Amino acid sequence: MVTGGPLTCARWRLFYGLRRQIGLLMLLFHAVNMVGGQIRYSIPEEMKKGSVIGNVAQDLGLDLKRIRSGRARIVTGENIHYTELKTDKGILVVNDRIDREQLCGDETPCSFSFEVILENPMELHRITVEVLDINDHAPVFPNKDKPISLEIGESAAVGVQFPLQSAEDLDVGQNALQDYVLSPNENFILKQHANPDGSKYVEMVLQKPLDRERHPHLSLKLIAVDGGTPQRSGTVNIDVTVLDSNDNVPVFNQSVYKASVMENTMKGTSVITVNATDADSGLNGVITYSLSKTKGNAGNVFNIDENTGTVSVSGQIDYEKDKKYEVRVEAKDQGGLTGTSKITIDVFDVNDNAPVINIMSFSSPVSEDAPPGTTIAIMNIKDADSESNGQIKCSIDGKLPFKIESSLTNYYNLITDQHFDRESVSEYNITITATDLGSPQLSSSTKLHLKISDVNDNAPLFNKNSYSAYITENNSPGISIFAVSARDSDWNQNARISYLLEDTQVGGSPVSTYVSLNSETGVLSAVRSFDYEQIKQLKLVVKAQDGGSPPLSSNVTVKVMIQDQNDNP
Picture 1 (cartoon, rainbow, N blue to C red):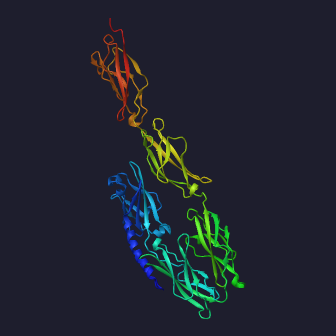
Picture 2 (picture 1 turned 180 degrees about the horizontal axis):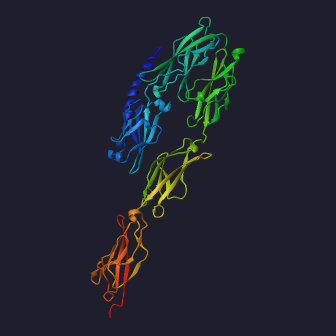
């Protein structure tokens, strides 16, 4: 309820209309807009913890089995603590109190974004949650318990304007401050103005000359009203003391002053000097300057010398927070009359932020038969600067078989650029550097260690195409004749070699009745005693087979020559 003065019928109609609009806003609760891997939800602020924001699995076209097997999780974003992904149900719920004013201030629309990542295979989806305002703040005047004190000369001309304190309402849109009302009186009316950013401020305009002898003091109330349902308001008292004979208002030589400043400018640096004059003489013509109450933090960044009108830097200027400031400056004479002007200060960006690299997912080891184009890692790279200072180029140090491709905004994929050969290179040290385009350029780097896993792509190889061995007849059974040896370039089980004797015939008998082969050592041994007069040569085929799946093998021929002894008369 608004206190201290009646509201017009038109305003009541406005308030009832707003109630209907609030109802329509609630219907937006589950509205979903999904375009190319992006979902947008709209919810009101101050929802209870556990409230459902939306069905992520349904809106992405994923079943719950895929959500669980892909280890779906929320990554990146400064405000991910506000939400929680329930992977058992595939829904997104409120995890923490969401205060739109704390999250976005007066920025509208208010939203925060984050990404949901799935693995096996990798998928990346962006979710944006728009937070809708509810009317949970009333307009508040600074120092509301302290009246606005004005000293006005009785000779002040009709039409003279007196700037008043502006109320601040943390809500936005229709819920924000909409109107000011001045308590009924015969001397003053209100004149409302709008700043370029949409905020309102008021001036009290003299419509009937003051008479100090009849009314040396006036007590008024200024009421600020928002447009929410229910409507909220704030009030401040205005105490007017009527003075004699100060009939000229200070006048600035410009209605708008323009200046610029670089971010990170040192405190104490002068920005601009304003100038106002007063046609009165004596104390009534002495002017003091001040910066009026401003929206945002401009009052913490600039101050003004009350005597010279020089505006200088008093706080930290950060282009990433504020790109432009607008402040109202007041010139007040000793009789209480005040003239106003406006100063707009543009902030120029300095390249003072290096890119920040976050590895969102990294796969190691990777199989040596991975095809070119395989994604190895997903990176999120951001630079808080703007324009060229915030544009990023990403590179890989050295000549390595990888390349970087951009995917979503601020996301980059590290992918393979050619086939691997573990037998040539078994691991890679990858240094990724992100550099902005500012002057001077700033950069940051991160390192990844990638291992290559083996594939059974090499068959065992003998060091000769054929072997010849010799044994003297009348040998003892079990004696070693010869040893074959093969090597395999693969690793571990894929390189474990077994030796096999091919099933061939010698003189109508299996070769295994003459010789045996040790499967691990490759040693060939005699099974019987040979007789040169019966058999002079054995021709064998030995196979070397690795332990891969499927196994690979190669063959070699071994000729065993029987040597004669003088064992026959």
